[in-house]
Length: 407
Image (cartoon, rainbow, N blue to C red; front, side, top):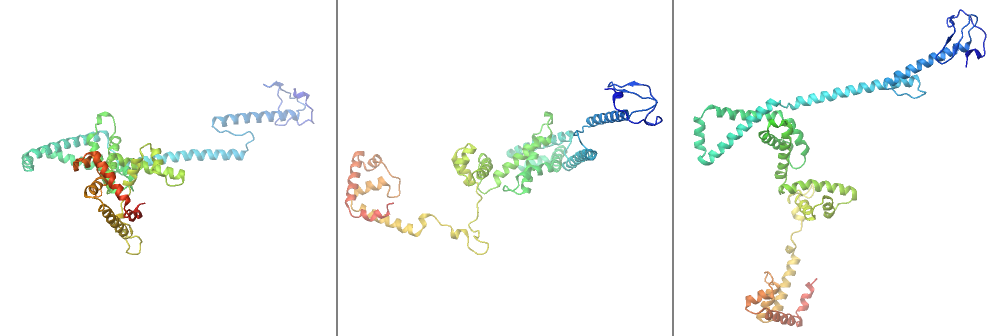
């Protein structure tokens, strides 16, 4: 639509700054802007202003898209400023976080103080030489004795003493430089029966043992290699020294699995799980779960006080064996007297056969064949005498006195 067809308004001053005398031009969009010397329409002025605003808006949208800012269609100026502040704050936070990570990493590296590859190779080589000398010295001691070894070392050259001295220094330096690694691994196993100092000591032993086995030609760092030796030494120490009743190594690893399964099942079932349920979760035999659970209990002293105030101990309130209860002792004595009275009603051979068959003398019960060999009778004859003896006992009135003890 041509601008000339728009309704006209009162003419403006032709010398206005926004209405210069320009020739008639054709815009890119096919809109003809007509400028006359006499008058300029307000519609033309408004069209120019709208076009200028559209160009600025397009340029602003392109700049925002390039900067990664996604705005909505009707976002205001205050919202735009707020988004820009958030972006600057976010970028600043990322920079600060990255600097903190780098500072922590450098501080941790300074604290640990790992050795360089050349120093690792030199120290491990010294440890291997010292280990060879110690093995040779031990073999010579077994064959010749300590006195002859001492004389040889006293008259020997100083190179051997120098190697042993370097070995001791290498061990001290290695333990000092990697103490942070040992402490970090030992901290994971606190509260399992050994103190932190004992765990650190065992981990240091594993560190030195692993350094003797280390081969720098395999392209692995010493810290990565000795990590597993430190962990293994700590686990072995826990299996050997953490409890009074020692568990086998393969059973000790089951203790943690059973404890974890017990916690999971307790939360799921809201009750204490049984041995069968834990064995089903762990896919092991029930007897293994029961054995490890019973053996892994922490022992307590019978002299421990029951209450904080008072002298009553556990051994004073714990019941003893059933056989030691006075009522049971009297009952057992009465049973024995009743059985003796019953056997006295039989002849000697019948009473002896019953004693051997039922083990009434406290011995292992015997079969008819074993009794026949002992009494030099046939198996069938022993069976007949056994039946006759039982028939006689059933006819006596003394049997009624023993029915009281039969459950």
